[in-house]
Length: 417
Length: 153
Image (cartoon, rainbow over all chains, first blue to last red; front, side):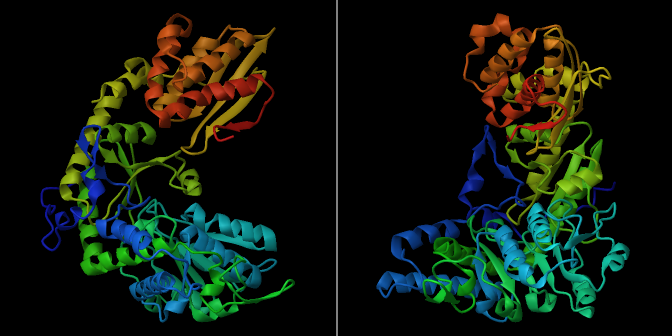
Protein backbone atom coordinates (compact mmCIF):
# COMPACT_ATOMS: atom_id res chain seq x y z
CA UNK A 1 0.00 0.00 0.00
CA UNK A 2 1.10 3.52 -0.83
CA UNK A 3 1.98 5.39 2.33
CA UNK A 4 4.37 8.00 0.99
CA UNK A 5 1.76 10.60 0.33
CA UNK A 6 -0.14 10.15 3.55
CA UNK A 7 -0.45 13.46 5.25
CA UNK A 8 1.33 13.47 8.57
CA UNK A 9 0.25 16.79 9.93
CA UNK A 10 -3.20 18.15 10.10
CA UNK A 11 -3.33 21.68 8.78
CA UNK A 12 -6.45 22.46 10.73
CA UNK A 13 -5.91 20.88 14.08
CA UNK A 14 -3.11 20.67 16.62
CA UNK A 15 -3.77 18.09 19.35
CA UNK A 16 -0.88 19.45 21.37
CA UNK A 17 -2.94 22.54 22.11
CA UNK A 18 -5.27 20.31 24.09
CA UNK A 19 -2.94 17.67 25.50
CA UNK A 20 -1.69 20.08 28.15
CA UNK A 21 -5.20 20.19 29.62
CA UNK A 22 -5.03 16.46 30.39
CA UNK A 23 -2.72 15.87 33.37
CA UNK A 24 -2.83 12.07 33.00
CA UNK A 25 -1.31 12.24 29.51
CA UNK A 26 2.02 13.10 31.18
CA UNK A 27 2.12 9.71 32.90
CA UNK A 28 5.27 7.65 32.48
CA UNK A 29 4.44 3.95 32.06
CA UNK A 30 7.29 1.45 32.59
CA UNK A 31 9.72 4.24 31.82
CA UNK A 32 7.96 5.29 28.59
CA UNK A 33 5.54 8.16 27.91
CA UNK A 34 1.93 7.00 27.99
CA UNK A 35 0.26 6.49 24.62
CA UNK A 36 -3.42 6.20 25.40
CA UNK A 37 -5.24 4.33 22.64
CA UNK A 38 -8.12 2.92 24.68
CA UNK A 39 -10.57 5.76 24.18
CA UNK A 40 -13.44 3.53 23.10
CA UNK A 41 -13.34 2.07 26.63
CA UNK A 42 -13.11 5.42 28.39
CA UNK A 43 -11.53 8.78 27.63
CA UNK A 44 -9.22 10.82 29.81
CA UNK A 45 -10.43 13.92 31.63
CA UNK A 46 -9.25 17.49 31.17
CA UNK A 47 -8.40 19.62 34.20
CA UNK A 48 -11.64 21.60 33.77
CA UNK A 49 -13.73 18.48 34.35
CA UNK A 50 -11.67 17.32 37.33
CA UNK A 51 -11.78 20.80 38.85
CA UNK A 52 -15.52 20.98 38.35
CA UNK A 53 -15.96 17.92 40.56
CA UNK A 54 -13.76 19.45 43.26
CA UNK A 55 -15.58 22.79 42.97
CA UNK A 56 -18.91 21.08 43.36
CA UNK A 57 -17.95 19.26 46.57
CA UNK A 58 -16.10 22.28 47.96
CA UNK A 59 -18.53 24.98 47.01
CA UNK A 60 -22.07 23.73 46.47
CA UNK A 61 -22.58 20.19 47.75
CA UNK A 62 -26.24 19.72 48.70
CA UNK A 63 -29.11 17.59 47.55
CA UNK A 64 -31.00 18.83 44.52
CA UNK A 65 -34.68 19.78 44.22
CA UNK A 66 -35.27 19.55 47.98
CA UNK A 67 -33.54 22.06 50.15
CA UNK A 68 -34.59 25.68 50.57
CA UNK A 69 -31.12 26.85 51.43
CA UNK A 70 -28.20 28.52 49.74
CA UNK A 71 -26.25 25.37 48.84
CA UNK A 72 -29.33 23.44 47.81
CA UNK A 73 -30.31 26.22 45.45
CA UNK A 74 -26.80 26.47 44.02
CA UNK A 75 -26.53 22.69 43.44
CA UNK A 76 -29.98 22.54 41.84
CA UNK A 77 -29.22 25.39 39.45
CA UNK A 78 -25.90 23.83 38.42
CA UNK A 79 -27.50 20.39 37.97
CA UNK A 80 -30.29 21.79 35.79
CA UNK A 81 -27.78 23.91 33.90
CA UNK A 82 -25.95 20.66 33.03
CA UNK A 83 -29.20 19.19 31.72
CA UNK A 84 -29.61 22.21 29.43
CA UNK A 85 -26.03 21.83 28.18
CA UNK A 86 -26.68 18.20 27.27
CA UNK A 87 -29.91 19.15 25.49
CA UNK A 88 -28.15 21.82 23.47
CA UNK A 89 -25.23 19.50 22.67
CA UNK A 90 -27.51 16.99 20.95
CA UNK A 91 -30.02 19.62 19.81
CA UNK A 92 -32.91 18.19 21.84
CA UNK A 93 -36.04 20.36 21.60
CA UNK A 94 -36.23 20.66 25.38
CA UNK A 95 -34.05 19.95 28.43
CA UNK A 96 -37.04 18.07 29.88
CA UNK A 97 -36.28 15.32 27.39
CA UNK A 98 -32.91 14.66 29.01
CA UNK A 99 -32.86 12.08 31.81
CA UNK A 100 -29.61 11.44 33.65
CA UNK A 101 -28.67 7.79 34.11
CA UNK A 102 -25.58 5.92 35.29
CA UNK A 103 -24.49 5.43 31.69
CA UNK A 104 -25.54 4.01 28.34
CA UNK A 105 -26.28 0.64 29.90
CA UNK A 106 -28.75 2.04 32.40
CA UNK A 107 -30.31 4.26 29.75
CA UNK A 108 -31.05 1.24 27.52
CA UNK A 109 -32.30 -0.77 30.48
CA UNK A 110 -34.61 2.12 31.29
CA UNK A 111 -36.18 1.97 27.82
CA UNK A 112 -36.40 -1.84 27.88
CA UNK A 113 -38.19 -1.71 31.22
CA UNK A 114 -40.25 1.47 31.30
CA UNK A 115 -41.18 1.57 27.61
CA UNK A 116 -40.58 -2.03 26.48
CA UNK A 117 -42.65 -3.76 29.14
CA UNK A 118 -45.56 -1.51 28.32
CA UNK A 119 -45.44 -1.52 24.52
CA UNK A 120 -43.84 -4.84 23.59
CA UNK A 121 -45.75 -8.06 24.08
CA UNK A 122 -46.09 -11.69 23.14
CA UNK A 123 -44.77 -12.48 19.62
CA UNK A 124 -43.75 -8.88 18.96
CA UNK A 125 -40.34 -8.44 17.38
CA UNK A 126 -37.39 -6.25 18.25
CA UNK A 127 -34.72 -5.70 15.62
CA UNK A 128 -31.11 -5.36 16.76
CA UNK A 129 -27.89 -5.85 14.82
CA UNK A 130 -25.25 -8.52 15.14
CA UNK A 131 -22.70 -5.86 16.02
CA UNK A 132 -24.23 -4.65 19.28
CA UNK A 133 -22.32 -4.14 22.49
CA UNK A 134 -23.71 -6.41 25.22
CA UNK A 135 -25.39 -3.33 26.71
CA UNK A 136 -27.70 -3.13 23.69
CA UNK A 137 -28.33 -6.86 23.59
CA UNK A 138 -28.84 -8.24 27.09
CA UNK A 139 -31.58 -5.74 28.16
CA UNK A 140 -33.59 -6.88 25.11
CA UNK A 141 -32.93 -10.55 25.82
CA UNK A 142 -34.30 -9.99 29.32
CA UNK A 143 -37.33 -8.15 27.99
CA UNK A 144 -37.98 -10.78 25.32
CA UNK A 145 -37.88 -13.56 27.91
CA UNK A 146 -40.24 -11.64 30.16
CA UNK A 147 -42.92 -10.73 27.62
CA UNK A 148 -42.47 -13.50 25.05
CA UNK A 149 -41.13 -11.22 22.33
CA UNK A 150 -38.64 -12.26 19.67
CA UNK A 151 -35.28 -10.72 18.79
CA UNK A 152 -34.28 -10.40 15.14
CA UNK A 153 -30.84 -9.34 13.97
CA UNK A 154 -29.48 -7.36 11.06
CA UNK A 155 -26.32 -9.27 10.07
CA UNK A 156 -23.03 -7.57 9.29
CA UNK A 157 -21.10 -8.06 6.05
CA UNK A 158 -17.42 -9.08 5.91
CA UNK A 159 -16.66 -5.33 5.81
CA UNK A 160 -18.33 -4.84 9.17
CA UNK A 161 -21.24 -2.94 7.61
CA UNK A 162 -24.95 -3.66 7.99
CA UNK A 163 -26.61 -5.91 5.44
CA UNK A 164 -29.60 -3.90 4.22
CA UNK A 165 -31.00 -6.66 2.06
CA UNK A 166 -31.31 -8.85 5.11
CA UNK A 167 -32.70 -5.92 7.09
CA UNK A 168 -35.58 -5.43 4.65
CA UNK A 169 -36.43 -9.11 4.95
CA UNK A 170 -36.77 -9.07 8.72
CA UNK A 171 -38.72 -5.80 8.91
CA UNK A 172 -42.39 -6.70 9.22
CA UNK A 173 -45.65 -5.73 10.87
CA UNK A 174 -44.63 -7.40 14.14
CA UNK A 175 -41.55 -5.16 14.49
CA UNK A 176 -42.05 -2.87 17.50
CA UNK A 177 -38.56 -1.37 17.86
CA UNK A 178 -35.23 -1.10 16.10
CA UNK A 179 -32.35 -0.62 18.51
CA UNK A 180 -28.83 -0.29 17.16
CA UNK A 181 -25.43 1.21 17.62
CA UNK A 182 -24.61 4.43 15.81
CA UNK A 183 -20.92 3.53 15.75
CA UNK A 184 -19.52 0.04 16.35
CA UNK A 185 -17.11 -0.30 19.24
CA UNK A 186 -15.41 -3.20 17.42
CA UNK A 187 -15.40 -2.30 13.70
CA UNK A 188 -15.56 1.47 14.03
CA UNK A 189 -18.39 1.41 11.46
CA UNK A 190 -20.61 4.47 11.46
CA UNK A 191 -23.99 3.01 10.59
CA UNK A 192 -26.24 4.82 8.07
CA UNK A 193 -28.71 5.92 10.70
CA UNK A 194 -30.73 8.28 8.53
CA UNK A 195 -31.48 5.50 6.07
CA UNK A 196 -32.50 3.15 8.88
CA UNK A 197 -34.69 5.75 10.56
CA UNK A 198 -36.37 6.50 7.21
CA UNK A 199 -37.16 2.83 6.67
CA UNK A 200 -38.45 2.55 10.22
CA UNK A 201 -40.59 5.71 9.99
CA UNK A 202 -42.26 4.41 6.84
CA UNK A 203 -43.63 1.66 9.03
CA UNK A 204 -44.12 3.69 12.21
CA UNK A 205 -41.41 1.83 14.13
CA UNK A 206 -39.44 3.67 16.83
CA UNK A 207 -35.63 3.67 16.70
CA UNK A 208 -33.25 3.63 19.65
CA UNK A 209 -29.66 4.69 19.02
CA UNK A 210 -26.81 3.49 21.18
CA UNK A 211 -24.65 6.60 20.96
CA UNK A 212 -21.94 5.51 23.39
CA UNK A 213 -19.28 5.61 20.65
CA UNK A 214 -20.80 8.23 18.36
CA UNK A 215 -21.81 11.15 20.59
CA UNK A 216 -18.20 11.68 21.83
CA UNK A 217 -16.83 11.81 18.27
CA UNK A 218 -19.51 13.08 15.88
CA UNK A 219 -21.80 16.10 15.90
CA UNK A 220 -25.20 14.86 17.10
CA UNK A 221 -28.56 16.37 16.22
CA UNK A 222 -31.45 14.26 17.48
CA UNK A 223 -33.99 16.31 15.53
CA UNK A 224 -32.16 15.79 12.28
CA UNK A 225 -31.56 12.09 13.06
CA UNK A 226 -35.22 11.84 14.02
CA UNK A 227 -34.43 8.97 16.42
CA UNK A 228 -36.91 8.15 19.18
CA UNK A 229 -34.31 7.37 21.84
CA UNK A 230 -30.62 8.16 22.20
CA UNK A 231 -28.46 6.66 24.96
CA UNK A 232 -24.87 7.68 25.74
CA UNK A 233 -22.25 7.82 28.49
CA UNK A 234 -20.38 10.73 30.01
CA UNK A 235 -17.11 8.91 30.61
CA UNK A 236 -16.46 8.26 26.92
CA UNK A 237 -16.62 12.02 26.21
CA UNK A 238 -14.26 13.47 28.82
CA UNK A 239 -16.81 13.29 31.64
CA UNK A 240 -16.72 11.21 34.82
CA UNK A 241 -17.87 7.61 35.13
CA UNK A 242 -21.32 6.91 36.56
CA UNK A 243 -23.18 9.55 34.54
CA UNK A 244 -25.03 8.98 31.30
CA UNK A 245 -27.96 10.29 29.35
CA UNK A 246 -31.19 9.05 27.87
CA UNK A 247 -32.92 11.33 25.38
CA UNK A 248 -36.40 10.42 24.16
CA UNK A 249 -39.09 12.09 22.13
CA UNK A 250 -41.59 13.76 24.43
CA UNK A 251 -44.53 11.49 23.64
CA UNK A 252 -42.45 8.49 24.66
CA UNK A 253 -41.58 10.07 28.01
CA UNK A 254 -45.25 10.87 28.49
CA UNK A 255 -46.32 7.30 27.79
CA UNK A 256 -43.67 5.48 29.77
CA UNK A 257 -44.05 3.70 33.09
CA UNK A 258 -41.74 4.82 35.90
CA UNK A 259 -38.37 3.01 35.88
CA UNK A 260 -37.28 2.85 39.52
CA UNK A 261 -39.35 3.88 42.50
CA UNK A 262 -38.16 6.08 45.34
CA UNK A 263 -37.57 9.67 46.29
CA UNK A 264 -37.57 12.47 43.73
CA UNK A 265 -39.69 10.58 41.20
CA UNK A 266 -42.94 11.01 43.16
CA UNK A 267 -45.46 13.81 43.60
CA UNK A 268 -47.79 12.58 46.35
CA UNK A 269 -47.38 9.41 48.35
CA UNK A 270 -49.87 7.46 50.44
CA UNK A 271 -49.17 4.17 52.17
CA UNK A 272 -50.80 2.22 49.37
CA UNK A 273 -50.22 4.38 46.30
CA UNK A 274 -48.39 7.33 44.80
CA UNK A 275 -48.52 9.77 41.93
CA UNK A 276 -45.54 10.59 39.80
CA UNK A 277 -43.41 13.66 39.53
CA UNK A 278 -43.22 15.53 36.23
CA UNK A 279 -40.84 14.58 33.42
CA UNK A 280 -37.83 14.20 33.61
CA UNK A 281 -37.84 13.76 37.42
CA UNK A 282 -40.29 10.86 37.20
CA UNK A 283 -37.40 8.85 35.76
CA UNK A 284 -34.69 9.95 38.18
CA UNK A 285 -35.49 8.14 41.42
CA UNK A 286 -33.14 8.77 44.34
CA UNK A 287 -30.39 11.32 44.73
CA UNK A 288 -28.74 11.57 41.32
CA UNK A 289 -25.04 11.75 40.46
CA UNK A 290 -25.07 15.53 40.89
CA UNK A 291 -21.32 16.07 40.68
CA UNK A 292 -21.16 13.73 37.68
CA UNK A 293 -23.87 15.60 35.79
CA UNK A 294 -22.28 18.99 36.45
CA UNK A 295 -18.86 17.68 35.42
CA UNK A 296 -20.40 16.23 32.25
CA UNK A 297 -21.60 19.76 31.60
CA UNK A 298 -17.98 20.94 31.89
CA UNK A 299 -16.91 18.20 29.46
CA UNK A 300 -19.54 19.38 26.98
CA UNK A 301 -18.28 22.96 27.34
CA UNK A 302 -14.78 21.72 26.54
CA UNK A 303 -15.86 19.74 23.47
CA UNK A 304 -18.11 22.50 22.20
CA UNK A 305 -15.33 25.05 22.48
CA UNK A 306 -13.16 22.92 20.19
CA UNK A 307 -16.10 22.09 17.93
CA UNK A 308 -17.38 18.60 17.19
CA UNK A 309 -16.96 19.01 13.41
CA UNK A 310 -13.26 19.73 13.89
CA UNK A 311 -12.90 16.76 16.23
CA UNK A 312 -14.55 14.42 13.71
CA UNK A 313 -12.36 15.61 10.86
CA UNK A 314 -9.13 15.33 12.79
CA UNK A 315 -9.98 11.86 14.05
CA UNK A 316 -10.68 10.81 10.49
CA UNK A 317 -7.23 12.01 9.48
CA UNK A 318 -5.68 10.07 12.36
CA UNK A 319 -7.64 6.94 11.49
CA UNK A 320 -6.77 7.02 7.78
CA UNK A 321 -3.12 7.57 8.65
CA UNK A 322 -3.16 4.64 11.10
CA UNK A 323 -4.99 2.30 8.70
CA UNK A 324 -2.49 3.03 5.94
CA UNK A 325 0.49 2.36 8.18
CA UNK A 326 -1.03 -0.77 9.72
CA UNK A 327 -1.78 -2.24 6.29
CA UNK A 328 1.97 -2.59 5.73
CA UNK A 329 2.44 -4.91 8.70
CA UNK A 330 3.04 -8.56 7.97
CA UNK A 331 0.22 -10.85 9.06
CA UNK A 332 -2.17 -8.11 10.14
CA UNK A 333 -5.92 -8.68 9.85
CA UNK A 334 -8.10 -5.62 10.41
CA UNK A 335 -11.74 -6.27 11.30
CA UNK A 336 -14.05 -3.72 9.73
CA UNK A 337 -13.55 -1.76 6.57
CA UNK A 338 -16.79 0.14 6.13
CA UNK A 339 -16.81 3.24 3.95
CA UNK A 340 -17.84 5.42 6.86
CA UNK A 341 -15.89 4.72 9.99
CA UNK A 342 -14.58 6.29 13.16
CA UNK A 343 -11.31 5.98 15.06
CA UNK A 344 -11.70 2.43 16.33
CA UNK A 345 -9.40 -0.20 14.82
CA UNK A 346 -9.69 -3.89 15.79
CA UNK A 347 -7.04 -6.22 14.50
CA UNK A 348 -5.01 -9.36 14.96
CA UNK A 349 -1.35 -9.71 14.23
CA UNK A 350 -0.36 -13.15 12.92
CA UNK A 351 -0.54 -15.77 15.63
CA UNK A 352 0.17 -13.34 18.46
CA UNK A 353 -2.68 -13.52 20.93
CA UNK A 354 -4.22 -10.10 21.73
CA UNK A 355 -3.49 -10.53 25.43
CA UNK A 356 0.17 -11.18 24.82
CA UNK A 357 0.31 -8.31 22.35
CA UNK A 358 -1.40 -5.80 24.64
CA UNK A 359 0.86 -6.87 27.50
CA UNK A 360 3.87 -6.29 25.25
CA UNK A 361 2.55 -2.87 24.19
CA UNK A 362 1.87 -1.94 27.80
CA UNK A 363 5.56 -2.49 28.49
CA UNK A 364 6.20 0.19 25.86
CA UNK A 365 3.73 2.61 27.44
CA UNK A 366 0.92 1.94 24.97
CA UNK A 367 -2.58 1.32 26.31
CA UNK A 368 -4.81 -0.67 23.97
CA UNK A 369 -7.67 -3.01 24.68
CA UNK A 370 -7.51 -6.77 24.15
CA UNK A 371 -10.48 -9.08 24.37
CA UNK A 372 -13.99 -9.46 23.06
CA UNK A 373 -14.94 -5.80 23.69
CA UNK A 374 -18.26 -6.77 25.26
CA UNK A 375 -19.36 -8.11 21.87
CA UNK A 376 -18.99 -11.87 22.12
CA UNK A 377 -21.44 -12.61 19.26
CA UNK A 378 -19.18 -10.66 16.87
CA UNK A 379 -16.16 -12.71 17.95
CA UNK A 380 -18.12 -15.93 17.51
CA UNK A 381 -19.23 -14.97 13.99
CA UNK A 382 -15.66 -14.02 13.03
CA UNK A 383 -14.49 -17.25 14.69
CA UNK A 384 -11.88 -15.50 16.80
CA UNK A 385 -11.45 -15.44 20.57
CA UNK A 386 -10.42 -11.83 20.79
CA UNK A 387 -8.93 -8.84 19.00
CA UNK A 388 -6.59 -6.05 19.90
CA UNK A 389 -8.26 -2.66 19.60
CA UNK A 390 -6.71 0.77 19.26
CA UNK A 391 -9.13 3.69 19.57
CA UNK A 392 -8.33 7.37 19.23
CA UNK A 393 -9.49 10.72 20.51
CA UNK A 394 -8.63 14.24 19.44
CA UNK A 395 -5.69 14.40 21.88
CA UNK A 396 -3.83 11.60 20.08
CA UNK A 397 -1.07 12.43 17.60
CA UNK A 398 0.41 11.16 14.35
CA UNK A 399 3.69 10.63 16.23
CA UNK A 400 1.93 8.31 18.68
CA UNK A 401 0.65 6.25 15.75
CA UNK A 402 4.19 6.04 14.30
CA UNK A 403 5.49 4.79 17.65
CA UNK A 404 2.60 2.32 17.97
CA UNK A 405 3.31 0.80 14.54
CA UNK A 406 7.05 0.58 15.37
CA UNK A 407 6.21 -1.31 18.55
CA UNK A 408 3.89 -3.67 16.69
CA UNK A 409 6.86 -4.57 14.49
CA UNK A 410 8.94 -5.19 17.61
CA UNK A 411 6.17 -7.41 18.98
CA UNK A 412 6.15 -9.54 15.83
CA UNK A 413 9.92 -9.99 16.25
CA UNK A 414 9.53 -10.90 19.90
CA UNK A 415 6.76 -13.47 19.57
CA UNK A 416 7.61 -15.01 16.20
CA UNK A 417 10.57 -17.39 15.99
CA UNK B 1 12.32 -4.41 27.44
CA UNK B 2 11.60 -4.85 31.10
CA UNK B 3 13.43 -7.77 32.79
CA UNK B 4 10.28 -8.96 34.52
CA UNK B 5 8.49 -9.05 31.19
CA UNK B 6 11.34 -11.04 29.65
CA UNK B 7 11.22 -13.44 32.56
CA UNK B 8 7.49 -13.89 32.08
CA UNK B 9 7.86 -14.58 28.38
CA UNK B 10 11.03 -16.64 28.63
CA UNK B 11 11.98 -18.93 25.78
CA UNK B 12 10.51 -22.08 27.31
CA UNK B 13 7.09 -20.43 27.56
CA UNK B 14 7.23 -19.10 24.00
CA UNK B 15 8.30 -22.53 22.85
CA UNK B 16 5.40 -24.32 24.54
CA UNK B 17 3.06 -21.70 23.09
CA UNK B 18 4.33 -22.31 19.56
CA UNK B 19 4.40 -26.09 19.86
CA UNK B 20 2.13 -27.16 22.69
CA UNK B 21 2.72 -30.71 23.97
CA UNK B 22 -0.13 -33.22 24.30
CA UNK B 23 -2.29 -31.04 22.07
CA UNK B 24 -5.38 -32.75 20.71
CA UNK B 25 -8.19 -34.95 21.98
CA UNK B 26 -8.18 -38.31 23.73
CA UNK B 27 -10.87 -40.73 22.54
CA UNK B 28 -10.62 -43.04 25.57
CA UNK B 29 -10.60 -40.25 28.15
CA UNK B 30 -12.30 -41.01 31.45
CA UNK B 31 -12.56 -37.31 32.33
CA UNK B 32 -13.30 -34.37 30.07
CA UNK B 33 -13.81 -30.77 31.09
CA UNK B 34 -13.84 -27.38 29.39
CA UNK B 35 -12.23 -24.44 31.16
CA UNK B 36 -12.73 -20.86 30.09
CA UNK B 37 -11.84 -17.37 31.09
CA UNK B 38 -14.91 -15.38 30.01
CA UNK B 39 -13.10 -12.07 30.46
CA UNK B 40 -10.62 -12.73 27.67
CA UNK B 41 -12.19 -15.60 25.73
CA UNK B 42 -9.50 -18.19 26.49
CA UNK B 43 -11.03 -21.65 26.23
CA UNK B 44 -9.53 -25.14 26.52
CA UNK B 45 -10.90 -28.65 26.76
CA UNK B 46 -8.91 -31.09 28.88
CA UNK B 47 -9.07 -34.86 28.44
CA UNK B 48 -7.75 -37.17 31.14
CA UNK B 49 -7.38 -40.92 31.28
CA UNK B 50 -7.39 -41.89 34.94
CA UNK B 51 -6.70 -45.43 36.08
CA UNK B 52 -6.10 -46.71 39.62
CA UNK B 53 -5.92 -43.18 40.99
CA UNK B 54 -3.29 -42.13 38.45
CA UNK B 55 -3.42 -39.85 35.43
CA UNK B 56 -2.22 -42.20 32.72
CA UNK B 57 -2.68 -39.88 29.79
CA UNK B 58 -3.72 -36.30 29.10
CA UNK B 59 -4.54 -34.09 26.11
CA UNK B 60 -5.89 -30.61 25.68
CA UNK B 61 -7.18 -28.48 22.84
CA UNK B 62 -8.43 -24.94 22.48
CA UNK B 63 -7.33 -21.33 22.10
CA UNK B 64 -5.77 -18.76 24.33
CA UNK B 65 -2.83 -16.53 25.09
CA UNK B 66 0.79 -17.68 25.34
CA UNK B 67 0.65 -17.82 29.12
CA UNK B 68 -2.46 -20.00 29.34
CA UNK B 69 -1.46 -22.25 26.47
CA UNK B 70 2.09 -22.84 27.71
CA UNK B 71 0.76 -23.37 31.22
CA UNK B 72 -1.59 -26.07 29.89
CA UNK B 73 1.22 -27.62 27.86
CA UNK B 74 3.75 -27.71 30.71
CA UNK B 75 1.06 -28.99 33.06
CA UNK B 76 0.10 -31.79 30.70
CA UNK B 77 3.68 -33.06 30.64
CA UNK B 78 4.07 -32.59 34.35
CA UNK B 79 1.01 -34.50 35.55
CA UNK B 80 1.30 -37.50 33.27
CA UNK B 81 1.85 -40.60 35.40
CA UNK B 82 1.25 -38.78 38.68
CA UNK B 83 -1.22 -39.84 41.38
CA UNK B 84 -4.28 -37.69 41.97
CA UNK B 85 -3.23 -36.85 45.56
CA UNK B 86 0.13 -35.69 44.31
CA UNK B 87 -1.53 -33.58 41.60
CA UNK B 88 -3.80 -32.01 44.22
CA UNK B 89 -0.70 -30.88 46.05
CA UNK B 90 0.67 -29.28 42.90
CA UNK B 91 -2.62 -27.55 42.05
CA UNK B 92 -2.37 -25.83 45.41
CA UNK B 93 1.34 -25.09 45.19
CA UNK B 94 1.18 -23.76 41.62
CA UNK B 95 -1.66 -21.38 42.40
CA UNK B 96 0.12 -20.06 45.49
CA UNK B 97 3.35 -19.51 43.57
CA UNK B 98 1.79 -17.59 40.68
CA UNK B 99 -0.30 -15.52 43.07
CA UNK B 100 2.88 -14.59 44.92
CA UNK B 101 1.72 -16.18 48.19
CA UNK B 102 4.77 -18.47 48.38
CA UNK B 103 8.40 -17.77 47.55
CA UNK B 104 9.36 -19.91 44.54
CA UNK B 105 12.99 -19.96 45.70
CA UNK B 106 12.00 -22.28 48.56
CA UNK B 107 10.25 -24.75 46.26
CA UNK B 108 12.55 -24.86 43.25
CA UNK B 109 13.23 -28.58 43.45
CA UNK B 110 9.62 -29.53 43.96
CA UNK B 111 8.40 -27.20 41.20
CA UNK B 112 10.81 -28.49 38.58
CA UNK B 113 9.72 -27.19 35.18
CA UNK B 114 6.73 -25.41 36.70
CA UNK B 115 9.14 -22.84 38.12
CA UNK B 116 9.15 -21.04 34.77
CA UNK B 117 5.76 -19.60 35.73
CA UNK B 118 7.02 -17.93 38.91
CA UNK B 119 7.35 -14.66 36.97
CA UNK B 120 3.57 -14.49 36.57
CA UNK B 121 3.25 -13.26 40.16
CA UNK B 122 4.67 -9.90 39.04
CA UNK B 123 1.65 -9.41 36.76
CA UNK B 124 -1.62 -9.83 38.70
CA UNK B 125 -3.70 -9.45 35.53
CA UNK B 126 -2.06 -12.55 34.06
CA UNK B 127 -2.52 -14.86 37.08
CA UNK B 128 -5.81 -16.23 35.77
CA UNK B 129 -4.18 -17.09 32.43
CA UNK B 130 -1.65 -19.30 34.18
CA UNK B 131 -4.08 -20.90 36.64
CA UNK B 132 -6.90 -21.66 34.15
CA UNK B 133 -5.49 -25.10 33.17
CA UNK B 134 -4.84 -26.06 36.81
CA UNK B 135 -8.23 -24.83 37.93
CA UNK B 136 -9.87 -26.90 35.20
CA UNK B 137 -7.72 -29.96 35.99
CA UNK B 138 -8.72 -29.80 39.65
CA UNK B 139 -12.41 -29.60 38.79
CA UNK B 140 -12.11 -32.44 36.28
CA UNK B 141 -10.49 -34.71 38.86
CA UNK B 142 -12.95 -33.82 41.60
CA UNK B 143 -16.48 -34.07 40.46
CA UNK B 144 -17.17 -31.78 37.53
CA UNK B 145 -17.20 -33.96 34.42
CA UNK B 146 -18.31 -33.05 30.94
CA UNK B 147 -19.12 -29.49 31.77
CA UNK B 148 -17.56 -26.05 31.68
CA UNK B 149 -15.77 -24.31 34.52
CA UNK B 150 -14.94 -20.67 34.51
CA UNK B 151 -12.25 -18.59 36.18
CA UNK B 152 -15.08 -16.30 37.28
CA UNK B 153 -16.86 -18.86 39.45
